[in-house]
Image (cartoon, rainbow, N blue to C red; front, side, top):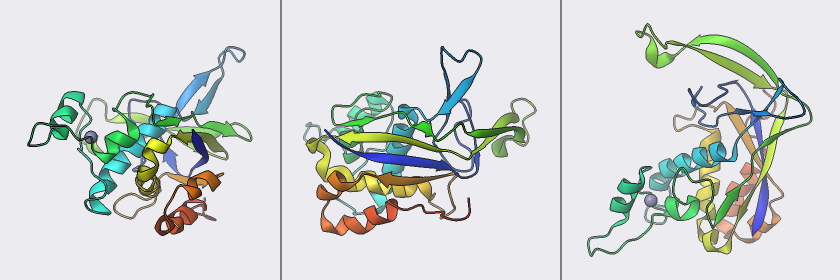
Length: 225
Ligand SMILES: [Zn+2]
């Protein structure tokens, strides 16, 4: 398998933990890693499943918008609905691009792509806890408040590995990264992402996609974090 590096830099308000995954438009969630040797102390990281899930839904969103006909998405996350969506009129099955690239949702392992956890590099992230009112719960008396945390001062790094089987779908992965750091309304996301160690990835991409790759090798929100 070939691979490339991913570096995520928090750039705003982020929610830690799984109960309220989205804050400020970013789907990527952080979790706490409890280490045996540091009892009572927890280290923040981005689980592989969170990064993969976020990229999967970003890929679903962009598949329809770019290269119509080239990349497809069944738009489903439920396994039963996916099977139905992949069935063609003649009764045969054809997997959509998103499912071929990422495998079935909810599964961390796929034969064609492998995500590492993103681990903080160069120190521990600074975290401020605050209580926020959920935008969508203004009228709800219960559950309207949640704890939100601001994380900054550290990058989260890891790798993504892929097999030749999904080489033709790598542009969809790049488009998903671009979508991840800029939401569909053009607003900045709460995270910025940069791709690193991309020589193998570049070799596997057609020339038309090299410009997009170059863009992803630099921060989008440079200078104002
Ligand atoms: Zn599908």
